[in-house]
Length: 283
Ligand code: NAP
Image 1 (cartoon, rainbow, N blue to C red):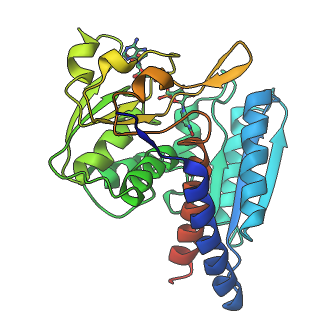
Image 2 (cartoon, rainbow, N blue to C red):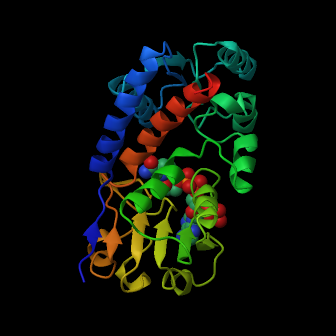
């Protein structure tokens, strides 16, 4: 078997085209959805992510602002800034690029953002709403994975989803979203015994560990769907957590790295920002 490759880019393009039309319709109602991204310090990877987010926002017609702060910015300064953005009627989405420098508590920052403007979906209020199956902002990477699976017409109900990873950013929320879709979910992590025993049972295997080639064809059940979330740089090249060549001979569907899950993450951020504007303006 050679798996069908699910590319995120064309799907992301399709969704962004739909969003462009939605934003135009909102402009006609004098609603201008706006995303503010805050970055502290000059980490090149983080800087490249935020520039990508800004470019994508502008392409669909969102107002966007990038606030760049020096690495020695105090936690209080950042909290005051978030407070001002929370009060600003023209701002609908606030994103503080993580990780923040060590002298700043990321949890305090996440909790300071108004849940109505928390387009990253990390605020405990939004995480709790997701946990209890209520409508809310879902974290962008997990949400992107859900949309990818749905658009590829992969049924979720009753399927055994095995997730390698339990981070608050990816592993836990993707498990919760798929549980909400009536999948049966198993989480594996660094203390899991006999990882292969678990991955081999997956109808849908999601790998979000940040370990290059952690999973290969031998770890995958024939016909499984494989979603590779990992982004690792090996010898200057981007690579996932799955050994693509061996896995694609066993899987039925597989996402590549790059061009797989990545483009969906930013797309869902745009979606959440538009949703935030619609909700704030009662649309
Ligand atoms: P993270 O916070 O480092 O979490 C990694 C998870 O993997 C942890 O739960 C860890 O277990 C588990 N793990 C690590 N090594 C393992 C092993 N050998 N066996 C089993 N489990 C293992 O990372 P993250 O933020 O979730 O991100 C995961 C990957 O996705 C990274 O490569 C990241 O760059 C990528 N990512 C991509 C996107 C995208 O848009 N494409 C977005 C976000 C993240 P413990 O909990 O026990 O430590």
